[in-house]
Length: 165
Image (cartoon, rainbow, N blue to C red; front, side, top):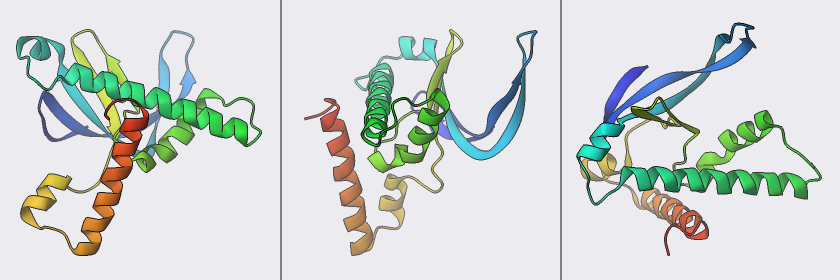
């Protein structure tokens, strides 16, 4: 993928999402590009251990994984209420990806490690972040109202998950 910026602990890349189309008998796979993109935050585990701060990226990652599990459980419960007794992993993933941004909290699509690096795979959001826009452009009253509603919805999601009160 293409590097799109620095994070507090590592780099963020814009990457093309691949779909496994065939799993070979030798353990390998054949992959196909999709039209989807994601952001992957790459963090060196040793950097986390060598440079502790008051903002713990490990705690943040654990909180995001907790939010993901809760959101998936909500989706399963919603499906049951619609008369769907069981969702396949593929259907659950599709529903998760369709609704993840509705929570107004950035949750991971997946988290992987190779033992030395943590790869946090996130939805890719086009454009600049909120703080850049606040510093450079500001917002109209309507935009500010929409942002406050999104922030309050995000806080409600975090509160329901027990992450903040």
